Length: 205
Image (cartoon, rainbow, N blue to C red; front, side, top):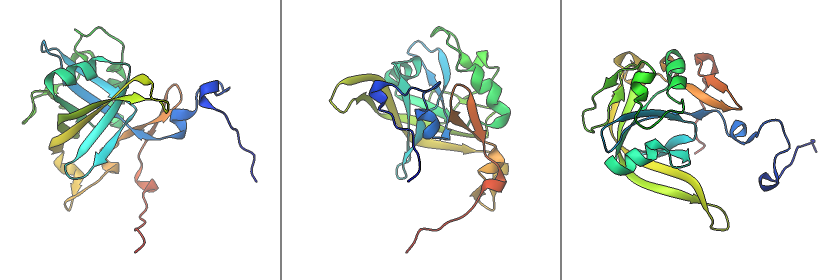
C-alpha cells in the first residue's frame, strides 16, 4: 500500500497552501460578463465553473461570497460566458482585480464590450468563443449539517453560442486551436491545452 497524506479539511490541511483546488484541476474558467441594475458592466473570472446539462445547455459558476456578478445576475437575469484563452490571459487576470462595483472591468482590462444578440449583457469581443445566458437558478450552498455557506452557485441556460469560424474544422470545434487556459490551483497556477495531449477513448458498449 502506497504512503498517502491524509487530512480532515475542518481541522486544517497542515500544508503551505490548501491543495483542494489543485487536486480538482485543471478547471475551466468562468469568465462572466454581467450588467448591474444601474447599467454598469462587470467582467470577472471564476475558477469554480463548468457545464452541467446538454439539453438545454446549462452552465454554472460558484462565487465565494456574494460578489457583484451574483448581484448583477440576480437583478437582470442575464449574463455572458467568455472563453479565457492564452492570448487573453493577462486581460483575464486584470479583470479579477478587486475594484468597486462602479468600475467597468471590460475597460479596466482593455477589452471590447461586444453587444450580444439575445441578452442585454455584452460579450468579450476579443475571445473566439462566448455564450449568451439567461439565469435559471441561484443556489446558496450548505454544509453537510445544513448550515448555510457564504457561497453562491449561479446556473444559466445558454441561449446563444458564438464560435469563431476558424475554430470549426469540417464542422467540428477544434478545442486546442482556441488555446483555452484552465485553472491549476495554488496561488497562481494555470494550464494551457496543447494538441499533443489529445487522445480518444470511446465508451464501452
